[in-house]
Length: 406
Ligand SMILES: *[C@@H]1O[C@H](CO)[C@@H](O)[C@H](O)[C@H]1NC(C)=O
Image (cartoon, rainbow, N blue to C red; front, side, top):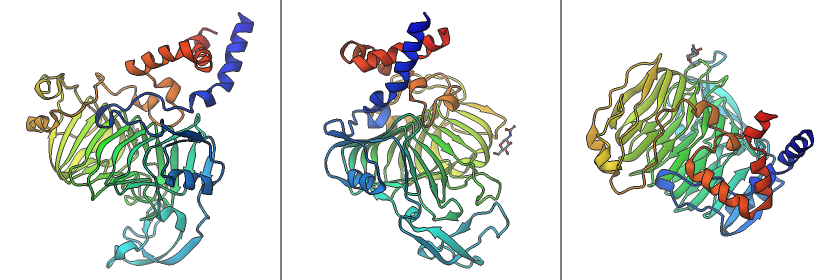
């Protein structure tokens, strides 16, 4: 017994890198069928320059990140006049005067890292996957623009894009993209948006099992919670938003417009000092989600919203299944009775719903892949892989039950 456990643990220590070189699971919802870089070679960059050239490449590639890529300082710093829209007290964000945004706000000197203010243009047919919790992109974001399609980003952390400054950087930008699956990504400490879409249309987008961590020392609400969260404004965007953990924000979590079709299912919103949903001219189905300590689940909100508070069957005609109920705990109210939203979803690939989102804070984000592979599809995939692929069989032998038994 002792020997076999020791062997199991030793194998567990060496096999995650093997496991992490392929994408785990399949995209649920609108991005179903996205294959990323599966058709191409697997590469493991070791410098920021290498990472950029692989990301910008036109070849299909699986790009494995097993280290931090630190872009801060790679393009220098700039000191110039920006502004202080919320004052200069500690805890408040200042703003870079991008596109003359500052207007009549009081001037303030800003010094920022240039790399954070522009992002890497990712080419089509890529899988960008992290090993364990080691895959970190620091100080620069990713852009999916100009008809880029078929990209999977899984299990990486994007962080530290000039969080002191509005316009300091967006982590992920979608602008005229399709078949993009963002899964088990963590985003923290950014100047502007975690994810922003627009103004070109983005279709077949699934954002799943990701953590949007708004804890910051520089906030537009001056209270430690990031205001500029998720902003989806591409014309006619189609976005599945499932299993995500959005916490310590104070606004735009998300803001949705542009006649977007937005399916939010099994997400967990927590510790939000302002508002979660904001926007207008969008069709939103919100189900199976939790609002826990969210001051305003929706504010400045005129979109069409169906958000059932009990499990009901109004969804069956459009989705082929009942919707799951939303749960509000220590939170403001949410009105969402516009069931006409549902017909907009007819004919699209709709993600399944779990009964509730209670497991999400534990399973969303980076470094969680082995503990969150709870979908039936993924278990099936792992079981069949065991027969043919030796390292995976050994890894499967080291799964949680065995360790607990020890
Ligand atoms: C509720 O959220 C606010 C804002 O993030 C936070 O300051 C407060 O501590 C939270 N309350 C609890 C009980 O966690």
